[in-house]
Length: 218
Image (cartoon, rainbow, N blue to C red; front, side, top):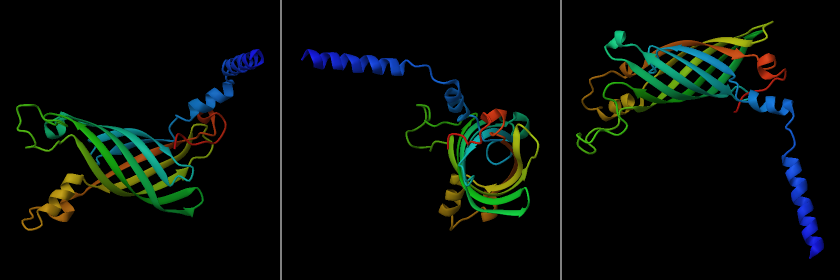
């Protein structure tokens, strides 16, 4: 029994010393660099305000990506101020390399948008009848788009620069269009909008990525 207790204490002490070891600085850096975005984006329009700014992470193949976006519509535009927070998921449907250092791609995706402005609610106040109004603050917004990327040579911080154009709609626009098929007041083209923007892909094999080519958390 005494031998068993001594062995158990030895194991516990050795484990505690192992957990107490100092984590190498390089390992700490690698963990930190995982959360450095792969891409920074700026977008005009697109159901997220007059302009929006975001950052994203790409898969190693760069065929899928996820963005976190903040958008803003000033009161001077439509008489009401709107602030939005969105998560955008994209999946490339095709990729081509027409010239050296140039990549074109088509993609489809979905935005999950939370909009905050006057009289938008996820849960309506008590003075409204229960279930009379649907929530009007959270929206699904499908998009399709095309992107043109250029390799940036000689930069420690930028890997690629890109330009994109998207066509999108809000889910409830599409649903209203389907529901009112017998008494339609909008054309199908009316429910869609066009947006444009540009992206900067960070050079994560340089100082930003710790000298080793790596992608973010995807």
